Amino acid sequence: MTRAFSLLFLVLIVVALTQVQTLALVAGKPQVPCYFIFGDALVDNGNNNALATVSKANYKPYGIDFPQGATGRFTNGRTIADIIGQLLGFPKFIPPYANVTDQEINTGVNYGSASSGIRDETGRNLGDRVSLSKQIRNHESIISRLSLLQGNKTFTDEYVKKCIYISIIGSDDYINNYLMPSNYSTSKTYTVDQYATVLVQQYSQQLTSLYKLGARKIAVFGLAPLGCTPTEIARFGTNGKLCVDKINDAVKLFNDRLKPLVVELNNDLPDARFTFINLTNILSPGGITLTTGPCCPVREDGQCIQNSIPCLIRVSAFYDGFHPTEISNIVIAERSYNALSPMDASPYDISCLTTSG
Image 1 (cartoon, one colour):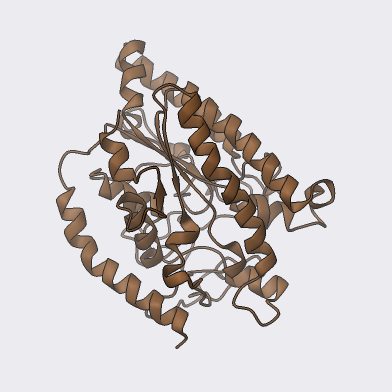
Image 2 (spheres, helix red, strand yellow):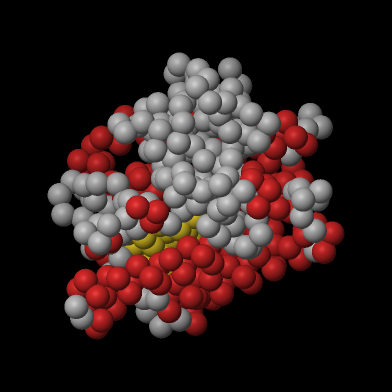
């Protein structure tokens, strides 16, 4: 067992053992009235199920540890968004936009769509998906529905300002865009530095649009070290290193621009409470990037082979070639909600967002 895996095993087990106690503390009335989720496969809970895409997870062995089975979540159990929702005190998982009812939108909606990105074309190599811009348009329609149901636009405007919003997106803008020169022109159009700048500029516009729709408490997740995912390692090789350094270097350029963007948005937008969640730091305890193979046998695109048998003890970092196991999601969600280090979240963690403003 490598030192990296030993650290991972220790961290994940300790967090898992404390999780029940933490969730017990937040049981009861939710800390905020509603919770809205934007992003990609890290949070998708079924929005891609009915789309014409290979990027869907509504089959076994996904969901093997989830009470409802294979729902479209790209993991063996709960997603990061699911666990944050529990930490916020919501008794039920936030439903996907694809089939949310009027009775449910009062507590929030999950708009996440696997293979989607900040750029509209991202993920088209895999089929249909709901880009972040489209997710925000869907949110606009939900706010309109909510206002009609509540019967008072002024009340709705104040109501949604108290809610928590999370956005976990950008990975596919690299994996299923920039790093696929045969499918996309971006790597020919932009240097890696220019691409990071263009991405963050577009993301800034999208987050500002979300603010204009009433969002105030928004956790913006940076990218994880994508060069350490099993599929990218298999595709590009590591030259004897732990990970694909050129991919992690590209991700760092994006993250290094994203954190200052959060500061800028907070300074420029009245009452804004944006915060940056540093996934790279959370996933690198002791400064060692955690790398393990996938828990399930994977296809060429990195997803689990349908009806394959996953590993028996699911404590590896990755469930398939790209996406974390539930126990990794626990680590991410816990440290996003209650930061263990000032490097985890800046200027504050999600628990602080609930009481701000």
